[in-house]
Image 1 (spheres, rainbow, N blue to C red):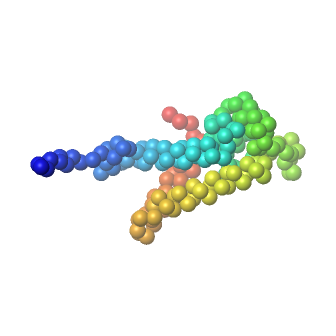
Image 2: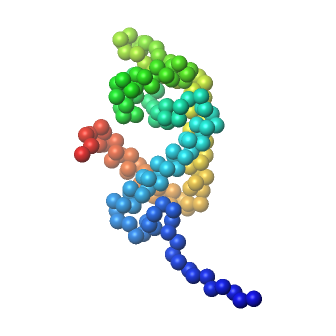
Image 3: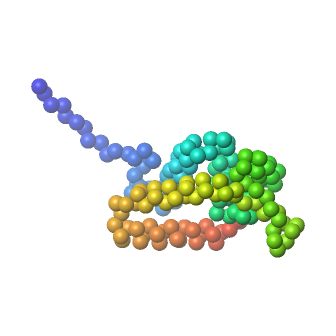
Length: 170
């Protein structure tokens, strides 16, 4: 029986070109795409498990605003990119589905605050805990030095993006 010769070809990652072949902007864009895909898959999986009664897009919006709650409608618009009408419809639907509640701001009764119901907060907290465990597991093979570098790079990206704020996109 003859052995077949196996061609060795440099394997290209599913995410595109290997990062050492990309320039500075392209490697950053690749990282953003990969993180976005992994996060969406993770949240999609949890949506199917925890929140089948809430439409997927609305569940994604809930996950987007979870760190801002309690907040007003303007903050939901800012976090999600929805219009005033879209954010209002979203909140109405989430109130009807039992995920959000409206209440008056103690400091300004003209301002209506929106917050999670206890059940929705419990679900999003569980998802956040699972996401934290996933992240720790994902980087478990990194050395202490690599983790420090990842943290520094993450802080830099956050600082730059926060400094830009809500400037108009070009």
